[in-house]
Image (cartoon, rainbow, N blue to C red):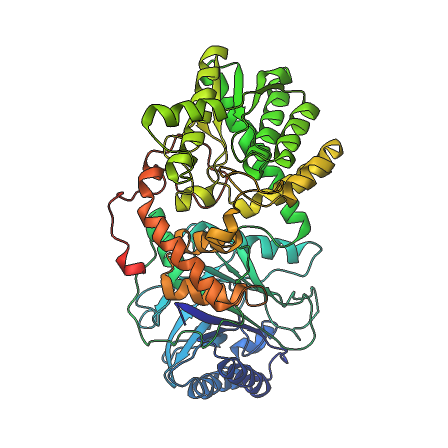
Length: 594
């Protein structure tokens, strides 16, 4: 479904040496995985026999039973399940035992691949098995798989990398295995599976962790319990289409392999990591670290640019909205990093036809707390003169009426920057620039774009984090977070904005979801709609999501000309639409996505 494939990893509770018992347990878990819609199920190293058989690995009784059991397991795979399991193997006509992975599918054993993670006392100590492994440790069934001994990340990866470990259950090993899986999958842009033996292994000497992890592109989707006594089966729905898109954009390549069979896509997406905020970590500690690092990247990059430009001051238009507030917070941190007086922040409020008292007061209060150089320059008279100059009737509140205000503000900021030896700091965020919700050569322009890679729905999280660092800003930042998003370009009504952006465009969190999956995953219209229906099923109905998607796709393609002329800025996000990152002509057709 939509390029997702369901991958299962099983950690069976085995009895060392009891091939019949272990075979039946593997078959049971295979059937459970198949009934759950899995395309592939992976078992640990030597799952069929157990890894603690010792000298019995040389016994023909064990080896012959393992060969018969391998054929029996292959018979239950059918045409739509790949089963990968570890087994001892003695090829006919040879007098050496190999630590192997059997690959079963289409009701037969497709091949054997050396595990690489062998005990040299009992197994042949190389990874070459003439006549059995013509393409090394890789196989393909519509998805390419490769088997490695872990940790080993130096080889060219496949779409699914299986790392077979033999670690002992020591303190910290569970976190180490999860961290390795996440790092390996992030580095390759693929699925990484880590297995560390089966439950039920002998504890003479050390305990086996019996831990398994599935990670996709740096994120752990599923993991088993450490030291479990019963069999465990975990699933992950991996978006192989999105992973391929990301690898193509980044120039990463995978090892080719000849397909043996074709696997079905996931029948549903119950094990997929589809969240309403894919760009934000879910765990509180990870989210706090994300916010901290984002703010640090912004302030570090701005400090570096100020030094390279020999600029002393930072000129910022403050409105009391989310974007300019985030920029002001970052400028405050930049002054502290450079040990500069906060008066080097020139905070300019420019009230116009639609400015409300709430936003104006919040902007001034935050600038006062920081200690910025506050300047207030009303723009209404200048705009009225401009209307007169160009012959525009100010009662006609169209794009001319709105954009005149945005461009007047930009002109003021630019001229102050020239006067004060400063840089105009841009406040526009990624959500706005993705849809061109900005005035060309108005708020679209600056001397350095600070928020250009930050999504609108992320900014409240960054400001909440800043409250924990600077409680004195708490009251004003909380009120800014609670203020409806509006450009405040139309006259206010009873103290409220003349129009609210999300009433026109739809919720920013929906658009940010589309940005993530369109830019980061290459999803088309049908897939975007289906994923958003899942992510927002308890908050927005299908009709509203579809309306937002139509707006997003139409504006994304038609407004590229604004992004092509974007100022330089720092990328503090996994998604960027800066000209150097996203290359697309302004006159491109978007018909395929309508």
